[in-house]
Image 1 (cartoon, helix red, strand yellow):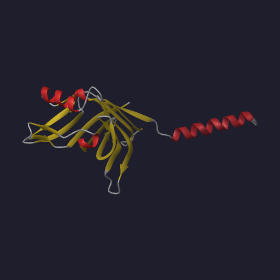
Image 2 (tube, rainbow, N blue to C red; image 1 turned 180 degrees about the vertical axis):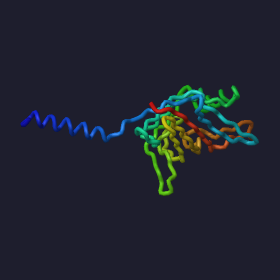
Image 3 (tube, rainbow, N blue to C red; image 1 turned 60 degrees about the vertical axis):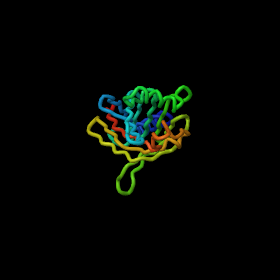
Image 4 (spheres, rainbow, N blue to C red; image 1 turned 30 degrees about the horizontal axis):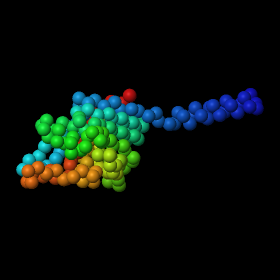
Length: 187
């Protein structure tokens, strides 16, 4: 075969060979029964934890790899449960939930340092304010199962939120510890 027909076949064969070398993207479907996202707060004379009971999570990665290429997490703060109804109501009022009900995190970069430690960098939005954060994150993959865990420390004042004080003596410290363990299955 010569001429344009041969060129088309060569082009098609080249595209097929190049395509075979590319990894397919995998989507990791979260197992919410085995996953947990928690916010720990310290206040005068006590501490409390809020658990995010509902959220939308999308994690994508290269086929067979444990490293994510895309992470998006979205939630409504009404699903952050501190196990105290009055505290939950006060928290939503403080967050101005009617005006800014949702929060989100979008990973912008996955980092592995010279010592092999891994970090996630991304943009987190709370109270309508977006900030860049970097935090240590460990990902373990076993077959089609993926487990990501880490801890990020945020200062709520960085998101335009006022110091929480009650009765002039009770203060919630501005540093919040967000811990997560996300379990997913590759699809």
